Amino acid sequence: MPKILVTGGTGYIGSHTVVELLEEGMEVVIIDNLSNSEREVLHGIAAITGTEPHFEEVDLRDRNATYGVFDLHPDIEAIIHFAAFKAVGESVEKPLDYYENNLLSLIHLLEAMNKFKVDNLVFSSSCTVYGEPDVLPVTESAALKKAGSPYGNTKKISEDILQDTMRSLKGKGVISLRYFNPIGAHPSAKIGELPLGTPNNLVPFITQTAAGIRESLSIFGDDYNTPDGSAIRDYINVVDLALAHVKAIRRLLDQKQLSAFEVFNLGTGKGLSVFEIIKAFEKTTGEKLNYKVVGRREGDIEKVYADTSYANSELGWRAEKGIEETLQSAWNWEMNIRSKNKRT
Ligand code: NAD
Ligand code: UFG
Image (cartoon, helix red, strand yellow):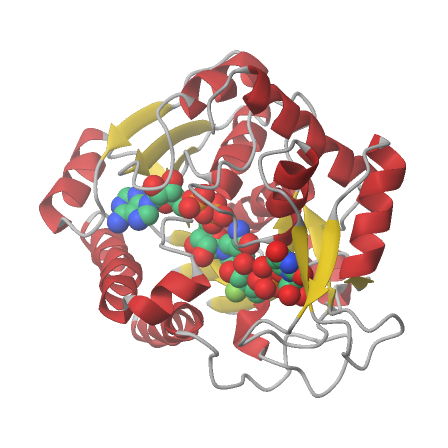
């Protein structure tokens, strides 16, 4: 069974992907510096799968330490690169931290791929590269817009770096996965999203509000040009998202990719408004949410949702889980961490 290196593997999407890789019988080596995750996540992964992944506490900005992991595991066949800083607002405050972390980590990994002869990479990109799309649903061939934040720009630049690098190298394959809005948690509630401090994202803010940790949810704008006035996104279950990574790895290892650099949208294909998410959450969990409408959040776009037909036909993947099941999983996870009293 192939050995896969997962950077950022104790993080939110990484941990769910590690579970699915282990369930497939693959061997997993995680690199994470624990800057935005906890070692305890490894116990959650082991509790679900019955298997402990290898774990290397390494900062990818440290080239020698990164190379050390490849020395230790010379049989790594493919890499899934999740590790990055991801807070849009923070990236505006600290742009150089974002460029340094997100770009240097990628460059070191590409150098390691060369040096240690690893041919396959899956990269975590984002629908943020499309900005406010001209046509919906948005396809992979849509024009890329100027990034709305330094974080978004690191994704755009990373894709450029990958494309240029692949052009110069023979026999390597890269798949860039553009995630829409990942939400929810593993159905076991043993792993999930652990935002530090006040969440920026909608669903963790909803679950923390329902749990009484936050007083009220602010809805950022009800004057958009959408049926109910609130903004529309494509919310994708994190387990569905994780499964797409398994497909991408299989595609690379089977050398079925048609070109050296491929891009896939990962979403459900369906747009939901903020009000629709709130209603679905209240319906499925029976919890009543306190919320108020406030002004628009700077930098937000009006609506974006994916055309997933390329991922459906070429990757053989589609999102399976419905929004209520997904929101219920987020709520189960929230209650689980609350019962462990891990967050105040
Ligand atoms: P996360 O913060 O939960 O996970 C990222 C992990 O990377 C963390 O465990 C962190 O400790 C680790 N990390 C960061 N810098 C590192 C470094 N220099 N060396 C080693 N480890 C490092 O984030 P996530 O939500 O799981 O996101 C994973 C990837 O998906 C990121 O690249 C993110 O930009 C991308 N993405 C996320 C979303 C989203 O909404 N969550 C949307 C689109 C794209
Ligand atoms: N929203 C609220 N109140 C909140 C939080 C969010 O009304 O407290 C609204 C936002 O205005 C937006 C929607 O809920 O309309 C979703 O917001 P999120 O912050 O959850 O997600 P975004 O679409 O803004 O951003 C996410 C990731 C980014 C990534 C982007 C595109 O957080 O990292 O998707 O991939 F760049």
